[in-house]
Image 1 (cartoon, rainbow, N blue to C red):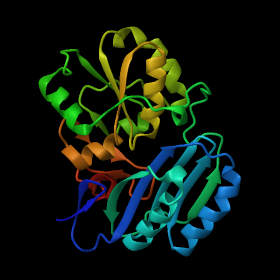
Image 2: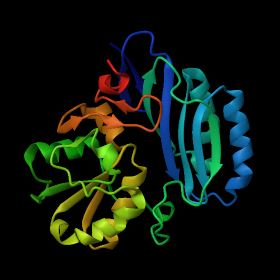
Image 3: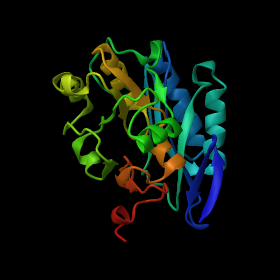
Length: 264
């Protein structure tokens, strides 16, 4: 098992065959004209030989890209040279093949659809809890003030079925636009507790935490999402794998393609 330190996280990958760097990243930041930006990003990523998806909206950017490590990092360095994207942080993993068939750069109304215009993380994100802090809370069974901690899975039901945190709330939603109504319906069971929303890479739980706080709940988001947790703490308090939206299908807590997904 080889390992590499990236973005403050040490990521493991099996053997020398895993030479493709996969990155997922998002940033809520104001983009006045995402259509004008689309062409430039499409050209840069195409010239770098990258494949995957980049979503742009007035609220920010969401991307999933894969390719040779130097090419991926070069593209990200150029992107971060734009002050709007200077704070872009990636979740990284490795594979022995590019898990995307082509490159797509799209403009959307939202980079993650919630259909709640009042929820605007580009104007200020909800408080976040780090993987280390959450690990301490889960190990002791309460937060630092002694409050019960409740984990809320913001992902779709089929994703949850691949794996989730032990004891996490799963409201069996089929799409993220259903989350607000589900949260409102379950508000009373969360009242008086410390609520931590989580998702694959952080983008959904960022909006979810803002909505939960608007409902008057003591809510945080898990910084870095499940992939950040895997990088920091592996399978601690976790059951199963993590579904990802690419050809690998799922990653295990070592951030390697899950054996069940690979058919091994």
